[in-house]
Image (cartoon, rainbow, N blue to C red; front, top):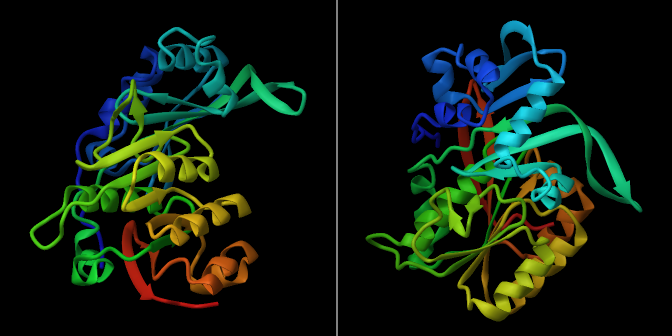
Length: 307
C-alpha cells in the first residue's frame, strides 16, 4: 500500500513564520519541491536548506545570521519570548497553523533542568501535512467487524508515523459508512499531532477527539482515563518504561490503543527491551510498519507478532 497524499500549500504557510530576508531565500524552492518539503532548516553561518524526501537541498549561498534566528523566534512567539519561556525550555515553539519551530543553541540551566536559551544557533520549521486517505486501505483490517483493535505504528524517524497516526485518529473519530464514530482521547505531549493553538486543533483530528497536550504521556493516559471516558487512547512515540506502563494500564481498563514507536522493522522492534515487553504482553493486536522507497511510503500490517 502507498500514499498518494493530500496536499495544500503548507510550505507557503510555513514561510509566513520567517523574517523577510529568510523568507525570500526559502521562497527560491520550486513548485514540485514545495509540494513535498518536510522541513526548513536554518543554521547560523550556513545557507537556508529544505528537507525533501531525497535529502536536504540548500537554497542560495547567503548564510543565515544569528540575528535572523532571533527575529524568527520573536515572530514565532508573537514578540513575547519571555511569555514563551516554558515552551522554549522544551526546545521548540508551537505556532498557529500547526507548525512547530525546533531550536538549538546555548542553553542555561536551573539545577539540572534546561531553563531557556542564551543564544540560538539553528532552527527547524517542521512542515506538518495532512494526508487524507492514507489510512483507508488499512481500516477494514484495523476494525474487523467494525471494532478497532489496538495498533502500534512503527518506523524510523521521518518515515511518517505521526502523519499516519493523525489520519487514523481522524477517520476513527469521524466514523464512516461501515464504522461508527468513536471517542478518541489524544495524548499529544509535544503538540505535533493536533497542534493545539489557543485550545483549538490546527490540524484535523476528527469530530470526537479530545486532546490533552504538553503533558507527559504516562500522566496524560491516566488523566483521560479518569475524565474523558475514551473508547480509544492515541499517543505519539512510546519512548520509556513509564509510557509502557501507562498503555498497559489503559489496556487493562478495556480501552483500545493507537500509538507509535521508533523501529526499522519487526526484528528491530523485537530487539529492543522496551518494546519486547509490549510484544510479550500482547498490548497491541496489530502492527503497521512504514517503509520509505523513492520518496513514497508503503505500509505493511502484521497481526499479533508475539515476543
